[in-house]
Image (cartoon, rainbow, N blue to C red; front, side):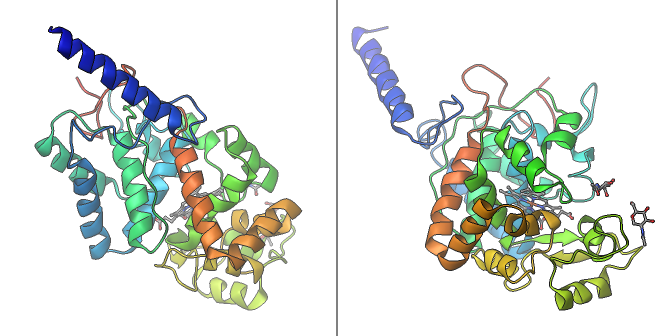
Amino acid sequence: MSQFTSFLIVLSLFASASLCFSHPGQTNGGYLYPQFYDHSCPKALEIVKSVVASAVAKETRMAASLLRLHFHDCFVKGCDASLLLDSSGNIISEKRSNPNLNSARGFEVLDQIKSALEKECPHTVSCADILALAARDSTVLTGGPSWEVPLGRRDSRSASLSGSNNNIPAPNNTFQTILTKFKRQGLNLVDLVALSGSHTIGNSRCTSFRQRLYNQSGNGLPDNTLDQSYAAQLRTRCPRSGGDQNLFPLDFVSPAKFDNSYFKNLLASKGLLNSDEVLRTKSTASLELVKQYAENNGLFFQQFAASMIKMGNISPLTGSKGEIRKNCRKVNT
Ligand code: HEM
Ligand SMILES: *[C@@H]1O[C@H](CO)[C@@H](O)[C@H](O)[C@H]1NC(C)=O
Ligand SMILES: *[C@@H]1O[C@H](CO)[C@@H](O)[C@H](O)[C@H]1NC(C)=O
């Protein structure tokens, strides 16, 4: 190796190190940075965006589904694409967990993105980074804020069904349980409220909120914090039994638009999930944030972007840890 080449290598090491250190919001020690693929796969970001854009053009809801996948990935062993693995050998897929079964969707879009990237630059872009980019692109495509996505995550060689069941909050968890589950990931109340704003797009199944309509506390009564005419409307298509898979918009005002109407709905007692409503009813600090975001869309957007970067930094595999999967559904052989 010539002296000049070694000089360049040392120089670029310094350059990338300073990039890492100058990037705020990296709380969990992952050395991620937005320029990670600039040389190894300069078209990566464009390719992800164009596949996401055509999937969302075909079905608007796909934006919501892809955004949610990044969350369900990051809360289980970090943002390592463990969620994308199918069952095989000694891997039990996280797709079977309570939060994901009959609910998590968009996996074929990830396959499409991955195969386009494998053509352009084989064995280079991780599935975990694709999830982070697709979440950002989905937010932008539906009218939400943009941010630069720190990159350089690698993919896990295992999945955790129990992690998926235990770490991802359930819609009927108490406020305290939900907050505890966020704190376990290094996220705080501000992140919880801002990220719950994701429920400005997408759908929920009847089964995820039925309890509120009929028997909230096991006393045979509906949730009395829910607007009564809204509740009556919901009951027409979410009966006491049956209709489990019937879909309802999480934000009935503008279900396909990423905006702050989710927070306005909460203030009107028209949050769909119990986990949404408790942000208003169970903590004054949380209620204060809900009010701020309902009043100030710009503030919501700014905090949402910051919290997404923070969530995307949960325990990434970097350096020589993990691998770059060739197929997001399988570990490399
Ligand atoms: C705070 C705790 C949270 C709980 C309890 C929760 C729970 C749920 C539930 C029950 C659904 C409906 C699933 C179904 O019935 O099929 C849902 C949908 C959704 N969630 Fe959350 N969620 C939470 C936080 C988040 C976060 C942090 C994000 C993203 C950063 C997110 C993004 C979404 C999106 C976009 C949808 C709609 C998905 C679609 O239409 O395919 N959620 N959530
Ligand atoms: C929450 O919902 C799950 C699944 O429907 C149910 O098994 C559980 O009993 C509920 N928990 C509470 C506290 O109501
Ligand atoms: C409400 O839930 C409780 C506890 O899960 C159950 O014992 C009771 O029978 C239910 N009541 C009605 C009216 O569904």
